[in-house]
Length: 404
Length: 140
Image 1 (tube, one colour):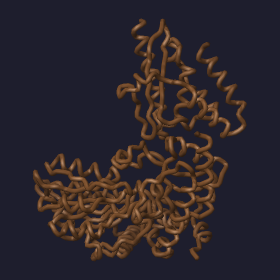
Image 2 (cartoon, helix red, strand yellow; image 1 turned 90 degrees about the vertical axis):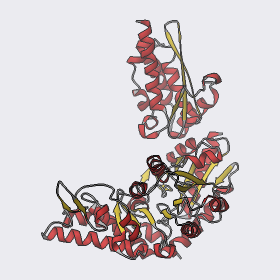
Image 3 (spheres, helix red, strand yellow; image 1 turned 180 degrees about the vertical axis):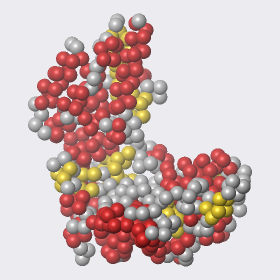
Image 4 (cartoon, chains in turn yellow, cyan; image 1 turned 135 degrees about the vertical axis):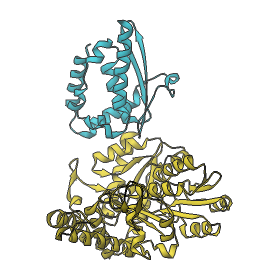
C-alpha cells in the first residue's frame, strides 16, 4: 500500500487551515507543495555555505559550486542525459523554451515551417510565434479531437521537408492528456526536423528518459515536482546546443572578453549568463532525490487509483462534464457544471478550504475548441487522499446547489 | 440617497448574515434576479476582460446624474456588480469621483476586489470613476 499518511507528514503546509477548514490542495498542476527535505536544503544553503559559484577560491564558494554541480548531475541522471553539460539550468520551463526559440530563430529562413499542437500552454505558443515573426517561418498546428487528444493523421499530413522544428507538451496542463511523444519525435526526425518537448506537466508524474525518447530538447520546472519556484532545466543534445547561439550575454557565459572580441564559454555555461539561482538549483536536486525515494512507478500507480476514484465520484454529480477524456491521461480533471460559470464554483470551493484552479489555464485555444470560458481543474498529486476527493465532490455538490 | 447612506445600509444588511454561506447565497440571489443591462450594450466596446470572468459596463447621463448598467458572465461577480450599481448609479458625477469602496471590506467581500482575483471588478470600479470624470468635465 502506498504510505500516503507518512508522506503527508513531510509537507508542513498540508497541516494548515484555509477559511477555517483543513486545506485540500488540488492545484498541483499550477505548483506542487514542498516537502521538509527540500525546505531543509534551502535553509542549509543559506545557513551554511551561501556564496557565489564557479569563481571564488574560498571554501564557501567551493562548497556551493560542488553542491550546485552535484545538483546538475542529479538532474542529468534523472533525465538520463548522456552528459551533464547537456543540462542547462534555467529559471523554469518558460525560460528554457524562450532560450531555444531565440537561438533556433537564427537558424530559420523564410518559408521554413514549425509545428505546434493545439494542446499547448501559452508559454509553448507565444515564444514560437515571436520566433516566426522574426524569421518568416510559418507556424502549423496539430489539431485535437473531442477527447482532447491530438489527431495524429493530421500531424503526418503537416510534416514535410520544410518542417524544421516541432514543439509539443508531454502532458497537457489543461486536460491532462499524455501525448504520444515517442511517435511525434520519430516522425519529425524522419523529415529532418528537431523536437522540443515541454515536460512541465509530465515531470511530477513520470521519469522521462531523454536518450530513449531521442528528443532534441526537453524542458521542465522544479516547482511542479516538489522543488522551489524560479528554477528549471533545459536538456539539449550536445550537437544542438553547440549550434544555437547564446541567449543572454553576461558573466559566467564567457571565456575571454575584450572590446574587439568575446569568446563564449563551453557548455553548459554558454547558456548560463549571470549568477544563477544557486539555492534553487541545489533544492531542485533535493526535490529529485525526494521523488525518486518514493519512486515514480509507485507515484504513477497511486495517482491513477486516485484519478479513477475522483472521476467516478465527480461523474455521479448531475450536469457535471469532464473535458479531456483521453484514455492516456494523468491525474488532472478539468470539468464544468452545466449552466454554471467555473469562476463561481472556484470561489465557493475556496470558501470550503478547497484549492482548485479555474479559468482558461493559459490554454485559450483549448477553451475556444470546446466553446467554454474555462474549466474548474482539480489536479492531483501523490500526497492527496481519497478522503480529500470525497471532500471535493461534496463541496462541488454544495456549490452546485447554491448556484442553481 | 447619498452614496454614504447606501453604503451604511449595505453594511447593516450584511451584518445580519451569520456565515459566509448566507452572505454568498444573498449575492448569488442578487446576481440571479436583477436585469442589469440592456442586451444591446453587451458589446465589445463595453467589455472589461478579467482573466476569469467578463464584465460589461454602460453609462448614461440622466439630468445631472450618471446611470450605470452592467453585467457579468459569472453570477457571484454579477452579485457584486449589483451592489456596486446600487451604490454608484443615480449619483452626481462629483459624488462618484469622491466616493471610496471601503464598505466592500466591511461587508466581508474584500477578496473580490483584489487585483489578483482577475474577475474584472477592479477595472470595473476604475471604469465607473472614468465615466464620472468624463461626465463631470461635460458639466463644467
